[in-house]
Length: 369
Image (cartoon, rainbow, N blue to C red; front, side, top):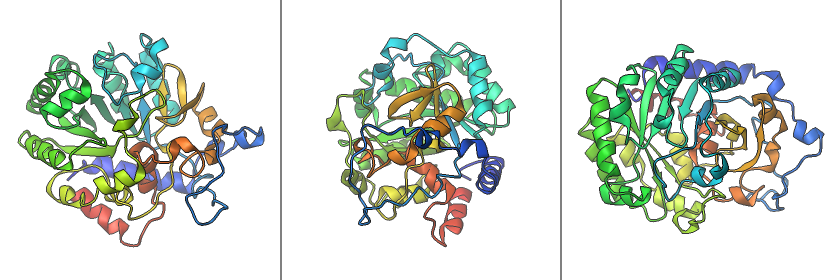
């Protein structure tokens, strides 16, 4: 199975209950009431209908995955990363363990992705992982892998816990992307150590303009030798803080890159859903559902999404109700025009938006393989 059965059951139950009875306090649209609007909004639409339809879940909003950033400090300066640039003024700050766990409780999402920065630089990372799993949440710890072997003793293997190691290619190209030689080898050493200790390990790969998809297949084949538990993959998209625009993909580029991705799904344990992969291949449309993957960091709840920062909110309810959701997404904001990243669109696939009759069987078959 691509995921533990208990994890799949909890997630499916949570989505079903939340769609049926979403929390009413999160459905208030205070941004609309106060006349707030996005100053970057432009008048155009990617649809043939000039009057864009409202988002199908605009009044049934709830979170799916909390992107928790306990700190933005990192030991690398990856070319495609905006965090170390966007949060340069607060790069030395970190959340307390209490603040992190309060955010987990406040949001209530069934899955938590600990990211950053490099989470393994966070002093209380072991206690944070324990606190999340004690709340019966699934936890993905996203890391560059360089400190993985060193800090393994602070964690305990668990069905709900995954180390998520970022690898953007084989050794030469990955080291080029992270701007330091030797990182790929250290990450592989960390993966070996974690698997030997009984942990679940997945990898996360970002596809850029120069990415050779044949190399990604070679990477997955190489990792299969270590019995890695799964892979996620998503196209890169530019942060406002990243100047290297030439590395990022347009929507047409993404559709071209991901043609034939089903072959990798058949051969390797990809944890990226087939519905989202259909979207990346241009086979169906999905609306952006950024509230499904909210981000919390030292500045607060980041709005509207993981990539764009127009505000930071003190509470999760403020984030849900004061963000002008209808002003974002392709066709509404030029910054969103080419975005197809997982943080905005994979929740839409999970929520069953624009679903086809065959999707349920297809998803079940995919999860159980």
